[in-house]
Image 1 (cartoon, rainbow, N blue to C red):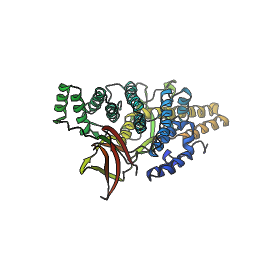
Image 2 (image 1 turned 60 degrees about the horizontal axis):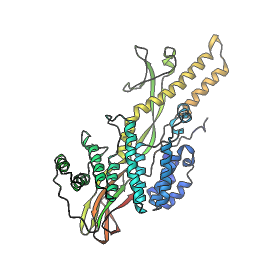
Image 3 (image 1 turned 60 degrees about the vertical axis):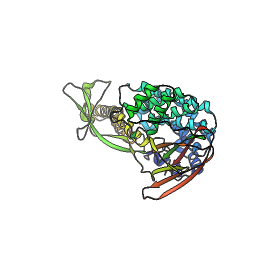
Image 4 (image 1 turned 120 degrees about the horizontal axis):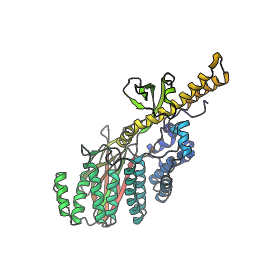
Length: 457
């Protein structure tokens, strides 16, 4: 029983790989990933494919990266839920089930696949990825009630979708995507979306593409809504560059233990409550509720996942090109997404975990009570009862898995390019105020180009 499951978190089990990623040693990280036993388990196949796709992308192996991401997509399309996997969750714990991916992780697959295709000059494949973003959004909409405030769309992915359509000179669909992204922000009570305010660049893109389509009424309405007057700049001869800055490291998951008791209200309904009485969760028990002894289900130890944020090494960045300094706008806060989406589903997660523990506890109590019937003790039944108790104790574990090579946030800037060679400098500032610079060369060819830069310290 002691070897039933290791007590380490997922982050600890992949520590060498994660350390190499954080150090920017991506070639070593690829080797570490291949040697990580935890990721070779079948239940972690989706995680393995996402990490392989990510590290291949960081190593500029774009074809290889999409090979892994496409396989991950196929897994998600086929579905990772089964009766057997559900049974594992009930009898053991969620960490023993197949990893099904966080909702925002599924959108991030499309982001990296689209960039891979663009870098391989496969524009049509990138457009297919843009359309898949819509399908992913629809799947999220089906999952949650449209009136629900939970994460059912992704503003950054819709913005990216507009950029991809614009890259393909499909200005009509570009406008629709930009507009849809803007509406995600506008529908929020505080006009923010999971830690990000609407980027000024997105506001300008909505108005600009509306005017290019001849939708002047819509353009005027959005100018009033955004409170800006937008005058399109003269197109640059060399086109434009969209520069993505992927900064910091995604939060890691750890385990937190809480204790609950089972209570019965005046109607005979069963509820779980924590020690402070601040949490009340219904227990939907399929058996005879009247025969459930609540005294037998006291002090349940339940293990829940909890995110821990990691402070990024770099706190800000700017771009400089042709003696012009350009600021970044944050477009995706993965830290905030992780914390908020886990919080939104926590009560549901608690209900599942506590129900599983209570069923085990009721079975244990029933067997131990039967072992002492008629004034005699049945050693075998008593032993089975203690065995169930020990099994419940040792098997309880939170699911601490997540796609950990993702950045904490993604910011972007749109840069005008001159015809021919362009030198673009990114200046990175850390918490101590020290600045580091990196210069890249981009060939301006009159089209919209993309570049992503990762600082995963």
